Image (cartoon, rainbow, N blue to C red; front, side, top):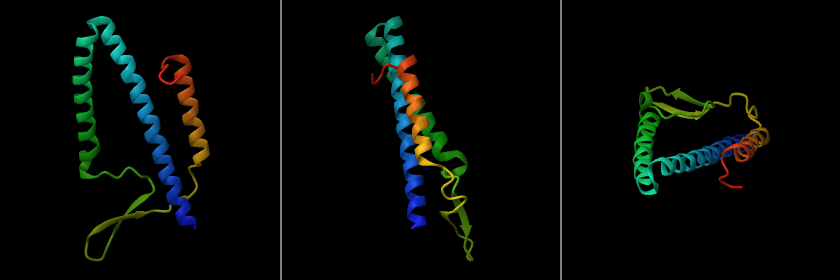
Length: 124
């Protein structure tokens, strides 16, 4: 039972972090396009914005997936070496329950609300 809760917490935190990243990317992208449209005109702004976004996304993917040949983003995942020398990943069970999902969700919601109130205006 503890193992299921541990994996559910890990998945929920990952989904919340992904949703926050998506929101922040969309909000900043919207502001960037608006500024480009103001200075360069709407058509040229969209073209330049799209090119910049594609370059940024390409560089981001290269950094994420090729950093040392390892894509291990979970601090709770441990690499275990078998007797034949092969390494496989397993949950490390380091302090299960350390990351309170509710607390993280509240912080993320506060970040989104403050962003909406101060600069973003993406949702509200």
